[in-house]
Image (cartoon, rainbow, N blue to C red):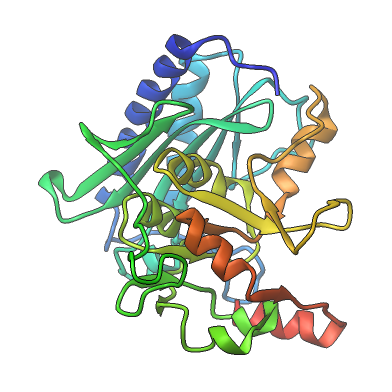
Length: 314
């Protein structure tokens, strides 16, 4: 990857991402528990979107385009009919991750901004509800600058000294409800994956790994806007992020590092489509624990019936 301009440029982008995610987060939280227009993207009552999602994304896009007119905003909602050519800087936005939680009055959701430079996350800001002053916190990072909440530097949860690689019982982890449809779980790992939870928001889970609440997180197959900010937060907090290896990955083992979304980046419409369409399973946390867990999960091959079942349980 070609290096972005310099650290001062990234610091400016990071600070503005904080400003933007704060504005969007306050807008979203002001609508929490109130009336909203709710639709199902799939038409079957699932995969919800609200007018709040769209208003949040519009606010983010307007602020970014005014400050950085040469950058691109790629968001979850309302994809254009014809994708534009990819710009070097792409603001990868999830205006509300955890919309189903939000609609149902469950305060586990997030607003996420991950800034990509030629496909790689280089700045991030994530807004989450939190029992702090104002009722929220913002986690933020830039490449090489660490991950932070205010002036508090974040660090992933380190494994215990007695068992430096194994997930610890009594420590939280998140796994998707479709785990058994996605992976064959090694017999030795069954019942030894920590205290598993499912939150309904990949962004929230990655952020909780970065701040040391979760010892690791395993997501379902999620989109670039669900991971762009979280990848950087976890890495800058001392963790790693893996994804199952694809057929073109010549590696020993079934996992590879997830560092970005377009390894052959070009300023073309095809690159924009590839970033929008990218879906990855992510395994994030302290390196020792992540490698331990990854070696005990083997990706399943799906027939048509199993793929349908997996969608039901995701």
